[in-house]
Length: 473
Image (cartoon, rainbow, N blue to C red; front, side, top):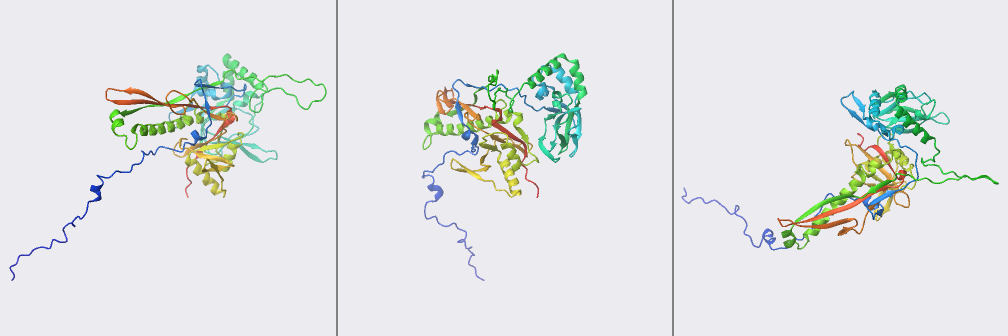
């Protein structure tokens, strides 16, 4: 037997000999190529880009209009404390035209207490055309279709009602009030009903209510044009020495004023960072650039969602319509277009745009596109549809679509700002140095001033309760 020791072969387990400098070590001596700081939150901001901006030198913009006697139909609100306990919020009864501006809160609370909840199912007829009006209805939840009899006896849908809408209060304008349309439920829901006799008993008891209603009826009796403005008497087609009527154009004595709103933040940069780390990019400028982008994003959100001047909250209730079936169809978009002259843009959440195109695909329709500043934008009837993710999606599947006419010369929607302000960095946005604190941190106040105004009520309309959920296959 051999006595030589067994030596294992280690050649295969040894690392290869390094013949040159590794790339990991070489990177320590290399100069990297850097991008500017990137930001996911930047959107297309089509509303800011397409809205005409008007200079507001005094910080306030007043919208003067002709005197209008038309009282808009607002939407009442409800509170629910249990499945079978739905109550109307008394103060919101002022959204009913006849109660607009009524000041007796106690009487409104008593009136609200006389409404009783009632459930309805899909297909139920709530009111029938031609029958006497015996109840006032407030729709707390659900969808109701208004149907009229056509000239040749055919039945036609002329509109839909949903959460917060009301019907039956028009009985005050007629001696023998009758329903002018059939109200038929298309979904299950809940309404609050008030017997007409119950309202009349309260009317007979309250002198303040009688006085308020009489004033409302007096205003309603004045002649107005199709838009609710006080009519200007003119004569046409006469011959000979006919007497020509005299008239004048009356103005609204309480015009709305828009004050410029603002978005602000304080940008903080350490002086050591600004002194030592500015090559190849200026740290302060990059911080400012991203801060301004965030402010502009918030500015567009406010122009849509601010309760004081945001478009979604300031659309006239007569310019709000519901979809016929839930998803946005070509018929819905046509109805939205027909509500105003010169519509020049739609604004919709990207998911609402996708839902509209799904409906077009179902019907075999191929919507066209238009070129906007070198961008190919989808369009309907030649009007571009701009995506805007700042239009909210509620309950995960419901959104809205805006249609608007823009520009001062068109009596449309305009943006308001003031240029030439001190330390201006961009139009109507300034950056003001606030000093250096005891920790050597420099502070800069960044402020953007803006607002939006609707010059005429029909300049903007909204398609509400748009179902954006994709149907199950």
